[in-house]
Each structure stands twice: as C-alpha cells, then as structure tokens.
Image (cartoon, rainbow, N blue to C red; front, side, top):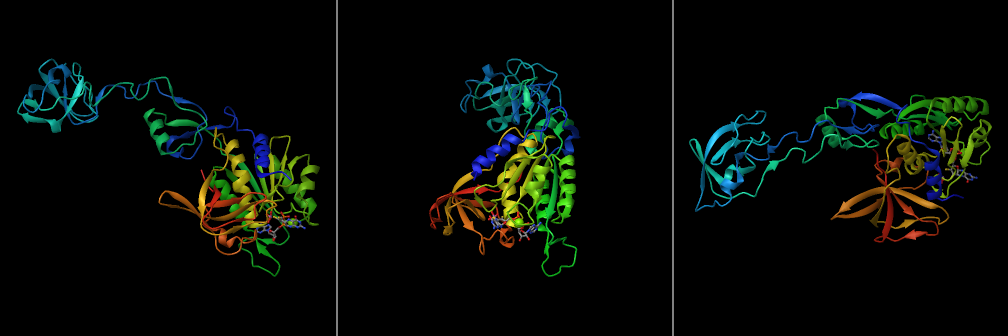
Length: 411
Ligand SMILES: Nc1nc2c(c(=O)[nH]1)N[C@H]1C(S)=C(S)[C@@H](COP(=O)(O)OP(=O)(O)OC[C@H]3O[C@@H](n4cnc5c(N)ncnc54)[C@H](O)[C@@H]3O)O[C@H]1N2
Ligand code: MOO
Ligand SMILES: [Mg+2]
C-alpha cells in the first residue's frame, strides 16, 4: 500500500495549476481578499514618490546643526510651514528651517529633520538643542520601492498587506485566478438530506455539507450534485457529468470492498486512470484517485465522516492549493508538540488522531479529542485544529512525549 507521502506526491503530480492566461478573471480591489494573484504587479511610481518627513519637527540643513547641544543651541529662521499634502515653495538656505509634519514633502535645500522635542519655538525662530544624525527622519524617494520593479509576484494569496500594496499601486482592478470548480457527490442508499424525515437504517448525508464547506473555505466553488444511490447506472450518469463540469470531483462512499462499493470500477469504465486505490493511513485507507483525459482529477473519498474530512485535509487540500494557482506551500504544515494524553494506534497504518493544539508558554501541546476515535464519530471532530500523526510501526506515544502534529489550516 502507498504511504501518505507517496500518495501526496502522486496527487501533486496529477494536478496542474490553472492557466495564468485562460483561467483568469479581473476583479475589483474591494473583492480581491483571499483571491490568488494571477500576474505580477508593479508601479510606474517610486515609493515614496518624493522625500518626506517621518516626524513632526523642523526640516534643516545638517551642516547648520551638526554641532549643537544644550549649551550651544542653534537658532534658525522659520521660512515656511509644510503640512502633509502641501507642496513646499521655498528652498531652505543655511540658517533657515521649515516647520514640517509627518508625511509632508521635504523642502529643497533641507536634508535632515530635527524632531520638535529637541527644539523650542521662539516666534519666527526655532532653537535646536540636539544634533541629529545626517539625513535623520527623512524617508527618501524610492527608498521603499523603485518604479518598475515587481511589487507583488503572481501566485500569492491576497490579504490585508497585499491589498495595501495594490491600493498604493492604484491597482483598482486586478487579475486573479478563477476559483476552482469542485463537484461533490455523496453515494449511498442509506443517505437522506438534513431536511428529510429519518427512517430506521437511514443516516443524514453530512459529508456533502462538510465537503462543500471545506471547498468554500479553501477558495473553491463547490458544485453540490446531491445524493446518488448505490446503483451503477445512476452513479455512471452522475460521475460522468461531474467529470465534465469540474476541475476536481470529490465523491464520498463506495470505495471499499463491499458489494455496493462501485466507484473504482466506474472510474475505470469511464476511462479514468486509477492512480491510487488505497493509502496506508487511518482513517482514510480506501482513498481512490483517478485522472481523466480532460484534466479532471477524481477523489473517491471513503464514506466514514471522519475519514472523509481527514482525507480532504491530508490529500485534497494540497491538490486544491496547487490547482488554484498558489505558487508554493501546498503541503500541510507539520509541527512538533508535547503530547498531553497517551496516544495509541494499530501500527499498520499511519494514524491520525484528532484534537487541539494549544500554545502554552511558547510550547505547542496537543490535546486529544475526548470520546471515541472511530472514523464514524463525527461528533468529537468539531473544534479540531490538528491531527496527531503516529507513524507506521508505532503503537503508542506516552503522555508528555513529543508527537508530530498536522495543522488543519484554511487559507
Ligand atoms: N471488509 C472490509 N470492510 C471495510 C474495509 C476493509 O478494508 N475491509 N475498510 C473500511 C474502511 S477503513 C472504510 S473508511 C470504509 C469506507 O467505506 P466506503 O468508502 O465504501 O463507504 P461506505 O461503505 O459507502 O460508507 C461507510 C460508512 O460511512 C457512512 N457514510 C457514507 N456516506 C456518508 C455521508 N455522505 N454522510 C455521512 N455518512 C456517510 C456510511 O453510512 C457507512 O457507515 O469501509 C470500511 N469497510
Ligand atoms: O480508513 Mo477507514 O477511514 O479506517 O475508517
Ligand atoms: Mg463501503
């Protein structure tokens, strides 16, 4: 059986990023948060575009004030007042100063700012009590950014800092990758929607909702195709239409060895190349992955609700990230943590136990979710932010020992 790492590598190899020429839409800056930039952004202007003052004080010529101190203050004549947004008119000469405020343009002739705390004002004059450093508190033109250089590279997610940069570049419309389309279907005769009255033997299709939420919070568009009974003809119809309409397909159920588990044979029948039919992980063993000629990658995800979400976190999320145009950081984040509870595993498969990471005095601690760690128990999965990983061959990690933990992150 494939290891989790091998399966991850196969999956990342199967998925190709959206095209930076065809799969792009132009959006307004206001709706750009959490989208992925599809092209490099630059500006025709330097930043800052003119020398300006970083402090409230006086713009002076350094040579005039370089030797002054409390005993020998320097008296300068104030020839102009420069608030932010005002264009200075006067060139500062030796013996002169301009009153200036944070963010205001430096006047010609001056090269240094003296903060007002080191001065006293006497009418039209200012007394300087402390020598500044040469060019102190001047933000020089182009010192943060040179016109024409790349400001933002393609393939990054847009958050508040990037929005600030884009606004500064006056980039009010920008190219982002379209959101990946992810078709979702639940297979199983026993499934009903949360709105239907429940009969004995039936269970609510929670996977459809969980997976749609997972896709949305990972930047994709979920296309919910509903519940498909364990019937070959109906499955063939639903699966082939899913493959035609989406970049990725996620189905749950029907991938194990039961008499009604038809998904893998249907994928092969529809021309899919089966790349993975099981992975040595618990939960999630019967994960089935196929690639279709149109580029669509199909994930046949085990039906148990915990297996379904763990498979999404471990294997679908990297695929979705790569597909979406993100240039790196596709793989989950693994960290070391101190293990609060005793953890046990079967030893035959890499085991994922769900729980919460806490940061205590700068050290991560993993707290196992209470209750059953059955892959059918979705109740104690709520509030999970991480999965403890117990390697193959290991059956126990004692409380207090170090454990590797996979963080369950959203974009
Ligand atoms: N003899 C064996 N039996 C099983 C094996 C095995 O190796 N040998 N593997 C087990 C493992 S591990 C898993 S995981 C499951 C996977 O089963 P399937 O993917 O075929 O899923 P189903 O049989 O259709 O359903 C399993 C379970 O999950 C419930 N389910 C299904 N869909 C949903 C849904 N949309 N929402 C909520 N719950 C759902 C379903 O009712 C079943 O209880 O196979 C084991 N068996
Ligand atoms: O692999 Mo299954 O997901 O153990 O329950
Ligand atoms: Mg089954």
